[in-house]
Each structure stands twice: as C-alpha cells, then as structure tokens.
Amino acid sequence: MKTPGHTHNANHTNARLAGLNRRRFLRGLGACLALPAFESLHPWGLCAAPAAGPAGDAAAKTAPVRMAFLYVPNGIIPSGWWPEGDGGAGFQLSPTLQPLENVKQKVQVISGLEDLSANAGADGGGDHARAGGTFLTGVRIKKTSGSDIHAGVSIDQVLARQIGDQTRFPSLELSCDAVRKAGDCDSGYSCAYEYNLAWKSPNQPVTPETNPRLAFERLFGAGSPSERAASLKLRQQEQHSILDFVMADTSSLQKKMSGRDQQKLDQYLTSVRELETRIERAERMPAANPQVETPAGIPPEFAEHIQLMYETLRLAFQTDSTRIATLLIAAEGSNRTFSEINIAQGHHSLSHHRNDPDTVEKVKQIDLWYARQLGKFLEKMEATQDVDGNSLLHNSMIVYGSGNADGNRHTHTNLPILLAGAGGGTLQTGRHVKVGPTPLTNLFLSMADRMGAQGLERHGDSTGRLTVI
Image 1 (spheres, rainbow, N blue to C red):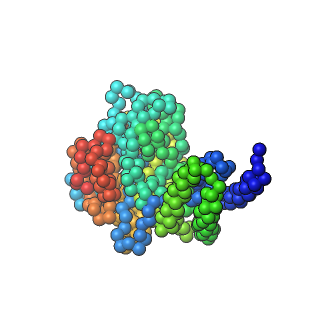
Image 2 (image 1 turned 90 degrees about the vertical axis):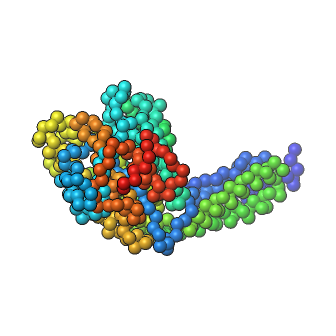
Image 3 (image 1 turned 135 degrees about the vertical axis):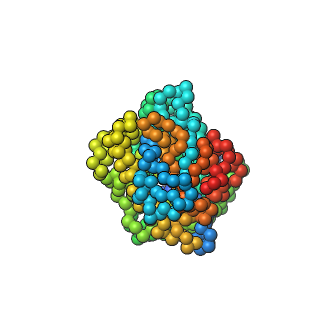
C-alpha cells in the first residue's frame, strides 16, 4: 500500500513529466531522444536537432574540392562523341560536345576507360542493369530480380564515410527518373541496379530524390528565403531551450531515483551532452539560405527537370552543404521520347540502330540534347565564385558519362567519359586524354585522393591510379 508521502511524490513527478511531455513536441526539431524506462519514473521523450558534422570555415582562403557523378543512359554514339586528332591540349570538341564550347578549357575527355564488370559473362542478357549497377562500384552485380540484390559500395559512399562529416550532408543523391527498388527490369536483373547510382552497402542502394522541391527543402528548408530564416532561428532557440530544461529537470529527478535508475540516467545524460556537442557543431556550420525561391515539384518538361536538379546540385556545392553528389539523369535502358527535338521513338529502342544512318542520326541528336543540358550547368558552375576567388567549377570534379559505350552492341570498353573541373587546380583541363584499356575505377581512385581520402588502396576492379589526369 502506498503511503501519502509516496503518493505526493508520485503526483509531483507526474506533474513534472506532464510539463516535459508538453515541451517535447516542439515542432521542427527533427530527431528524438528517449529516456530509458526507469523503475522510478514513467518514460518520456525529448526532441532535438538532426546531426551535423564539424563546421567548415566559410572565411578560409582554401576552398574544398567537390565531386559529382552525372549519368546518362544507353551509351553515346562514338563517332559523334570522340574529339578528332591525336588528343592533347589542341583538341577540338566533337559534334556531340559542341554545347561545351564556352567551358572547353575546363574539361577533359578521357578515352580508354572500361567497366568489364558490366560484361555479360555467363549471365547472358542484362547489359543495362550491369552498366548502371557497376558504374560507381566496379563490382559485378548478382543476377536476381528478387530482394537478394548484391552489388558493391559506390565510390561516392566510400568517400561519404571518410569525409562526409565535414558538411551538413555526407552526400546528395538526385535523379530525374523514377525510384524503383524491386521488380525485373532487365533480363532477370532487379530494377534496383538501373535506378540507383549510389550504394551504401552491397545490398543497400541509396534512394535518390526525384522531386526538385523536396530535394531543395531537404537542403535548405521550406518556404521563402525569409520564412526559412525565421524557421531556422526558432529551431535554434527551441533546441537550446529544451536542452537547458532537460539538464535542470534531471538534476531534481535524480534525487528520487534508485541506484540502477541513476546509472541509466547517467548514460542518458551522456547522450544529451553528445547532442549538445552536435548542436554546437551545427551552429558553427549553419544551414545555408540561398536567396532563391523554393522550386515547384516535378515539372512536365524533362529539360526543366534536369536544370532544376543541376541547380540544386550547384547550390549544394556553393553553400558547402555537401561535397559529394550523384545525379542519375535517366536510368539505364530509358526509353524516353524527345518531343523537344521532334523524336517520337524511345531512346533505348533507337540505341539499337543496327547502323541505320537515319536512326544513328536521331540518337546523335539525343546525345547532343543531353550535352546541351550539361553545358548550361557547367557554365553556371564556372560563373559561380567560390570562397577562394576561383570558380566553383575550378574547385570541382564532375564526371559525366555512361556505363554503356556503344548502345547498339552493349559494349563496356572505351566508355564515353568526360571529367569537368580542375579539382582545385590539381587536374590538367582543356584536352583529350587517351589511355590504354584502363578500369574506370582507376579514375575514381585518383579523384578520391584529391578529396582527401585516406588508406584507399583499391576500389572495385581498380588496378592503380589514373595518373595522367
């Protein structure tokens, strides 16, 4: 039987907890910490801000290097892609790459790179799935249309583990196509291989965001620039208020606890102190607030969709919200039509052209159309000044290409690969680089070095660094 004094203490505790309960549902705090189930008290929860990595110094004279991978499907007509001549600094852009003329001195076209993990071998058909699923991993994928998918860890996620804590978001994954993780999309291969570039683990793709509005709001918050600023200020005030409240309240509650509960409370307070540290780090690296309106959802025009995603990527790099990104412009095997350039047949269907001149020309026009979208993005990157006075493009490494070379024959050697940006001045741009048959992953290792990766000896099927870039 409970004594009156015990009842009084219990009521007092319940009242205290009721106050906590009212305060814990503050909006916009993002994540929750829960107290353990104490013998002496009822469980309750506390909401707090999402985690953030250590802050960068916005006033630093040295700008960070960024890295992005942009993927187009179904290969590219080789005769329209490769520059003429012997390569080197005097190269002339090919017809397909003419839209890059204004940034010609900021790019490298690299021939000779291959992805042999995408070859058929004993698995038969499925080159589109293998091309997409191995592009950033260099690891042969398991042929399955079930849930037992198995690929490799993509290079972007390898680096996100190492340096992702230096920005608010370890990496950014975008797509202008559908999100699919299941089903048979290519000769017995799961759709997951074609619709995801980034892989956190061999059986866990990182789902890309396809909606420009949601991508923007994830990075910068919802509403107009003024509304975003007001929300951030309120969120910071609430975070500090609730942490102060918890620390003060637990001091009085501790006196009423059993010894075992006090041990649990000590563990909990350690979590609270870690949360305080995370918030302090986040405040040294506050959420950016670009003075642009939040974009609408997915637009009906494909070109506008691509440009919105390119712009989101540019803003993410400019604000140092992340330094690692992937953009799946269209999934492998995409059969999208292009009414914008009066092409009513699907891209995938046309890519199997059987050397018919008229069909080849239509595919070249699609390749050119994609290059126009790229050119606009790279010009904006070049026009954006970074913190060190150089352009954002100068301080970036942007891979553009496909895991298929000749879409007609589904080849994976001599892939169409373009590397834009100077990597902070560490890359030799404005040229056509010819290498012998070399794993694409060798290029990724060299890029990883420039991102500050440590101890990365191999990636996928790599055989060394690509030193000529």
